[in-house]
Amino acid sequence: MSDKMHIKLTVNGAPREVLAEPRELLIHVLRERLGLTGPHIGCETTHCGVCTVDMNGKSVKSCTVFAAQADGAEITTIEGLGTPDDLHVLQRMFHEHHGLQCGFCTPGMITRAHRLLQENPDPTEEEVRFGMSGNLCRCTGYQNIVRAILAAAAEMNAAREAAQ
Image 1 (tube, rainbow, N blue to C red):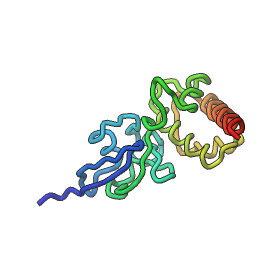
Image 2: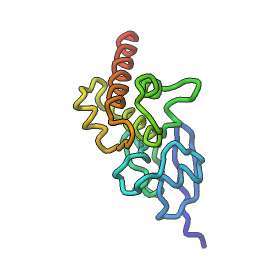
Image 3: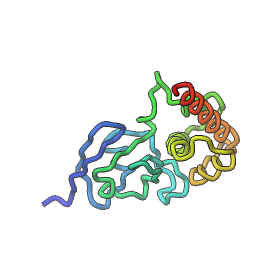
């Protein structure tokens, strides 16, 4: 008899099914079973944020979410935000504003920033800094990350206004 559970997820818009142990973490299911290597494994204690994904409209640290808790969930990873040929505005702004150096934290940063801008489409610098405080970067000093997020917000707001 198997101890594994049948887990159904929608990941980056596509229905997915996996067999997972009840104690298996979502980050391991995403990376090892579904081949999504954007979310990284860092501290495994929720402190660094490199494993951040969007789950049911909220930013979560996938290193402390059991796969069983994600059964039936909608998950978005960095892979679901854009492609190399069609970057999401946040990905483009991180590139244009030099919001990354080594890139290890970048997928979690961008995924968190995406949710932040959905929650607050026109944040102040202080609101960006507070909203991103659960994601750590050891390289950039945050200045360019904040600039990138504010630039993305401005571009997204301008596009929204032009569409009205």
